[in-house]
Length: 65
Image (cartoon, rainbow, N blue to C red; front, side, top):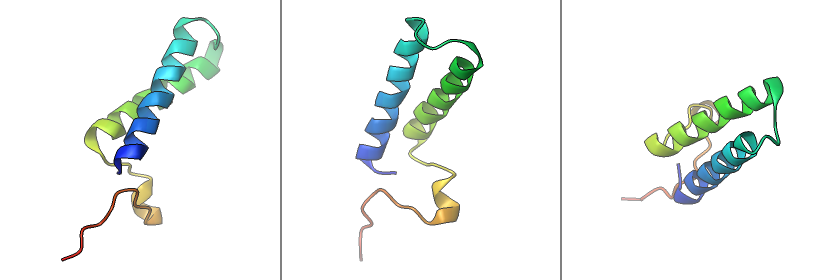
C-alpha cells in the first residue's frame, strides 16, 4: 500500500470519528462507519489491504531489479 493511500485512509477515518463524536452521524450507520474507519486505520498501520490482493491492485511503486 502506497503512502498516499495510507494517508487518505487515515484522513477518512479521522473525518468519520469527528462526525461521530460531534453527533452528526448516528444510529446503525454510525456504527458501520466507525468499524470501517477502524479497518482503514488498521490497514494503514500494517500497509496491507486484503481486498487489494484478489484484484491485483498495487498502490505502491514496485522496485525493479
